Image 1: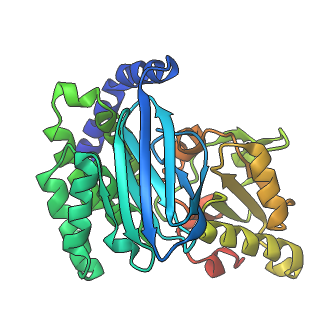
Image 2: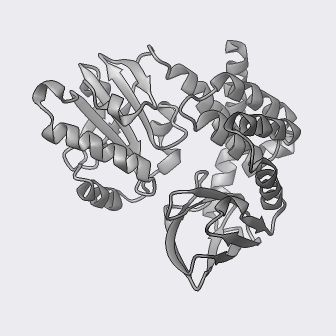
Image 3: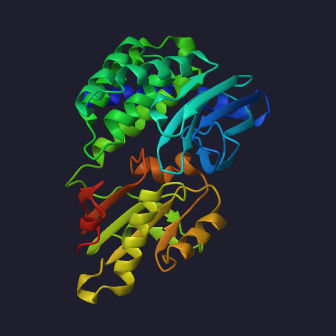
Length: 347
């Protein structure tokens, strides 16, 4: 397994120049406008949000539904994934690319049956959802695994791998690494320079790091500054009990975790308080982060918000692939990862 991990990391390193090339392309303004037209039954007016976990768009956009419809247009430089976060906190990915016109037909009472068309990836994912609608969680994971093996070079497979093998209370890192190995082997040299190839390389490297962030392992070395410009290093986190909370304003569950940690620090008896609390905000705007801290009565907590979202070196160092996410440390060693907030707040 160690040999496989080293091979994956080397493969990710070999794509570094391609990543730089893609970044330069994005900065040059090349690309095109993508458009999403949507119609919802049983949803006359609503507000929800979109963000991109792979950086195809920056920050969070607000979508306003009027008369059951909305249109969302955006200039983008490359293909990727946009996640829609609905008022009930359900999420739905939309696979976009420059010049694409995407259509959404949905019933707000049955979002799982949403029809998304306009690109092959959206059509494929819609069919996959329909075929798996009545499956149990275990069967869904098997269904996802079969799709990934049959479509190893698809951006849809990257989404499924994250959702069903990584973004769960008990990530299956062994299976994720096996699937990533299959996916990497299937890529041609041309594939590796595409957005999908670059995303796969980054995910491969992140999963390898997740294995190092295991229970009993030492906290990785970090160097960062909090939103007030003060340095945050391992030296401030390695003594006593430390809770690390990863959150964003678009994630209700992560904000709830933030509030509970803040409440523990404010109102618990000294003997019950966590010794150190560090929060990492994935919002692109530190000003927005400050407003959220104030709204959640969490201004006293040490918070890092570098505005780089998923591209932050800190996120990579800690092997974070989802939110909400947390780590619990005891004298510098990891004792919990992605644990219930009630456990996180116990000294």
